Picture 1 (tube, rainbow, N blue to C red):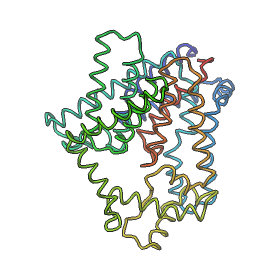
Picture 2: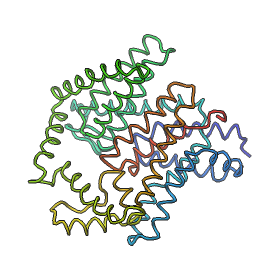
Picture 3: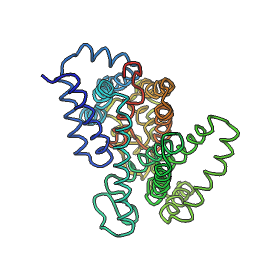
Picture 4: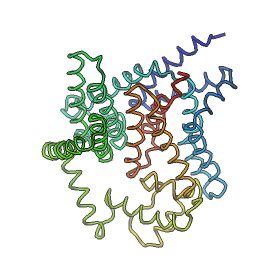
Length: 399
């Protein structure tokens, strides 16, 4: 028999490996996830596990969020697509509770270091492609060098990583001078990387992250924080706009898409506007329970045809709030927002400043970017959200 101490060490090694692999490879991360799940399911002590997991209101809300999706299968027509949605969101009912049960706060810094090492590797490869030292591969191109995932996922994860590096740089009093300057150099190169890649949602998240960090740096002193934000945010935006052709183009395209929306709705921003308008028709007709877990594509096609738009049909409105409202109505939206409510509430428990500040920042950043896409359905962003949630909101007295 494997002792509890040995099993705990195995879990922690697997978690550190997962932290490294999750920004790099879907297959590699999934293999580790499967190993963790199997070990947990067959390791016994089920009563103690149940008590530990369901002592957390966050875990209860996460499970309820998933159960609402299962309930939504009762009035859905497209059971296959509904099953696909359930498959995409299984982290909320199984993996988050498992992680919550096995994580130990004392190993958090090791996982953070592994995660940042993976981001450093990703950034290095991104620059090698951008400078045309190596050939683009997978999702990357010279103009948009995001090799291991698309820019839709990469930039939000990069913004979150920049926050952690900056927090360590300014608040970790144990850093020596060399380590301090290395963190500073890393945060600058990551910021530059943010604007030579094309993820606009991640770039918006970056500016939101910077604003949150400024408030935390000045310890919520509003006047100092607002003055810093007033000068720093426009300054970074102006420099990025003037020096990055891709960022310049993406900003100009976004403005142009809005201005010319009525003439041409088949643009990146134009499609999102149309998705929002058409989805609102679905929501108005099904405000409380929605149309069912799998019926967004069917109902959207009906509304799209009725409105006579030339925008293609979609399986996803590219907005997490809209998707949940159309599928599950206000019941679904409340269940989702409950997760973020408890994250924010629990973030104030820890006496560790990194965990406390990051525990507040993580939900706030996701609440921002979920306006532009369904970030709790994507593999990379959902896994990062779930993984860090398991550490940041753990019952500290038991950890």
